[in-house]
Amino acid sequence: MPEDPMAMIESVGHAPASLGECPVWSGYEQALYWADIDGRAIHRLEPSTGTTTSRVLPGRPGSFVLTTDPNRLLVASEHELVVLNWATGETSSWRQLEEAGTGNRLNDGRCDPAGRYVVGSMYADTSAGRWTGALYRVGHVGDATTLRSKIGVTNGLAFDAERQRMYFADTPTDCVLVFDYDIESGEASNERIFLDYSELPGKPDGACVDADGCYWSASVYGWAVIRVTPQGVVDRRIELPVQKPSMPAFGGADLSTLFVTTIGAGGTVPSEPGRQGFQPGELLAIDAGTQGRPEALFPLSDR
Image 1 (cartoon, rainbow, N blue to C red):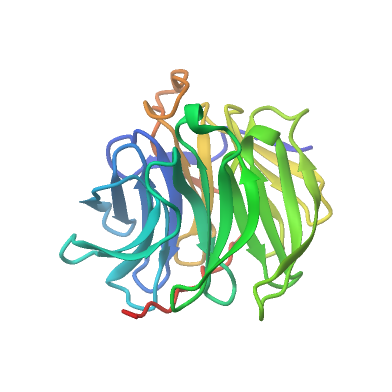
Image 2 (cartoon, rainbow, N blue to C red; image 1 turned 30 degrees about the horizontal axis):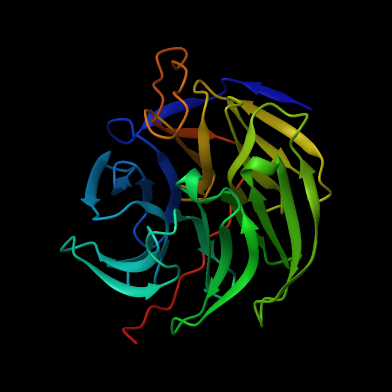
């Protein structure tokens, strides 16, 4: 497995996040959005100017998706989906997915190739149980279908439209799963193990798929992001200067910059100090030598 030790990595954005997650590139705006879950904020970076703006939310944003309205994001916050108006900073409830007070919160999610929001939950209070999460597919009018249950921590969601696949990781199980995914119906079937993480450094966190159909996984606690071929072979490892990368995403004018969010002071386990002057929680930008795919948009309606 070829390794890229500390290759072409820089810190971008502003101050380190407490729990950085969910980088999403907006091609329309040529800007990167990402979340600080424990900081209850979503940030927006314009790489051309270096300008970062932020919006604070009332709840923890586990993930979010871009919508057909460039001024509004659909955010998975605590137990519901809320609409964030970027211009005003105001939020409004759009769809409740789980009951409040269950010990869960919503976590990783992204649009499938047809623009549905696939999002999952995780245990946030272990006293309520550890396998209480679920994976949902949310349609354009708010209709929700449960795709999977008995999940610990939803992560690693990514889609490969060409191969009609959905990837998913339940972080505590040390496994990345792959499903056959019918883009027209949104049905997921034929669940199987794609990658066994148990003999790799770290655990599977967030992920994305590149233009070649390779799966890029953040190895949280493992100081790296790895690339996995469609056949399930790890063929590349990029060593990072921070212990807990949380999610990669391709962005930039030609989708050839790999942005990686990282975990700072947040989460349940303290982060080790960064290396070579980097700090945990920083947003990283990497010249990965490959291109990504644009994100699908959620066709947001006021219902």
